[in-house]
Image (tube, rainbow, N blue to C red; front, side):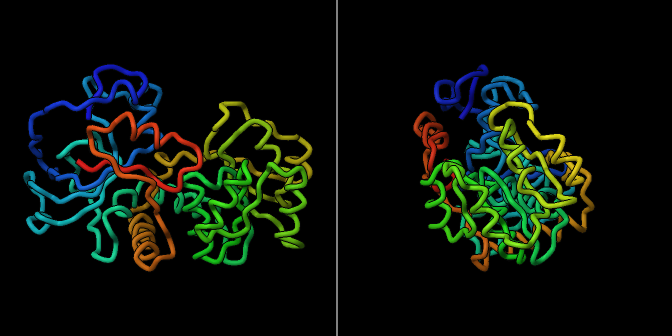
Length: 322
């Protein structure tokens, strides 16, 4: 599935033939089983992401597949293995290339649909949880909790014994999260939502907050943070500058930080990365972390797949199956 220029993915993505890629030194060729649509994949097609591929370009950046061919210097035992990989290019295709060092062998206990989305969003979520430096019994709060990272952060926090207050903007969003077993869900559509938040954490202090909206929503999180709390900017759905009262920052002695997954991941020690990936595999295999799927489409159904991926209220990821 390729695009010859930048613009609307639903209009521009189309099927095309390409030469079978040959792996170079340290690379493998992977036969794609399933590949998800992430928001950053669509931003890349629009030309509005930090990475602009040379055109024509094949979309997709994460997949689960079978190692089909090995480049020079790659261990022979990788041949035929089912693997997950992210931060690559061109996964919306029958075959793609990946660095051997970035492959994660997938255990039999994890199905293809979960394995296809195992790394990008879940690894961002678990890295974010580490970044917050919270412990069992602590309280944290996040907005856009019904997004891919938000759902995963809620589940991982629960598995670690961290209490996560999950804000959504619609009452329907609250019901969707509760159906997944996510607890402490509060809809900000209610005028008294801050009182509801207070009733959840009671006398305990909210240690950290994750903001993915920006604008006045950032200030709302600062309002409910406790003394010496940490406010992390993870994204800006509105595109607006953060609006935070200086009084909240000064009198609560708040710390404000930004979280960029790519930079955090690049600076992460290899042993910590292995530990976190191992935890993700265990949580998924044991059912503590669910990675639901909304729909699976063929590569010839780009417009429908993009429309479904962008629709509000979807229950999980949209995947491509070549």
